[in-house]
Image (cartoon, rainbow, N blue to C red; front, side):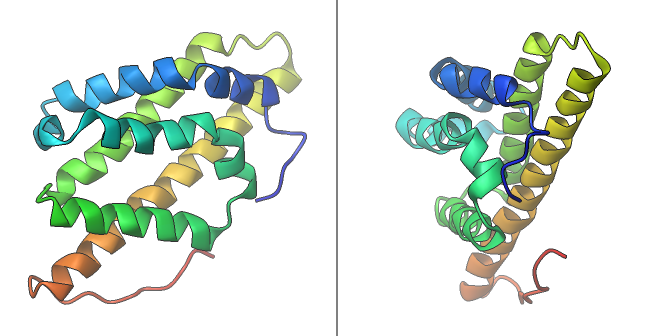
Length: 162
């Protein structure tokens, strides 16, 4: 995806400018959610680094990063979480919670005062959803590959995104 006028750059700037606070809130949620209990055992710094990388550089992840870059980042995350013994469902829930935190934060700032601004907000929501859909699939792919290498299952590469 390339940079587009259609993205609400004002909302992206809000996220990037408040990335540290949003990161703290998200990591707290990850470490306290009943859906991600194993994340309590991970170092705060590791979780904060991963979450902050997305929030701090949201425009790059949505506009500049190619599919192979996204795939590599999240395959590595899935493999890492497997090696740390985090259950796959918690890895996926962590990504979902991260997305939900971001979307809730954007909703708080997204006061559309025109049809065009509402369209931009909706478009940004679609780009964020698409990004996190890929992140979830690629993290699962990396997790499955790591599990397969350790004899737990047979993993097939099903190709990229169309």
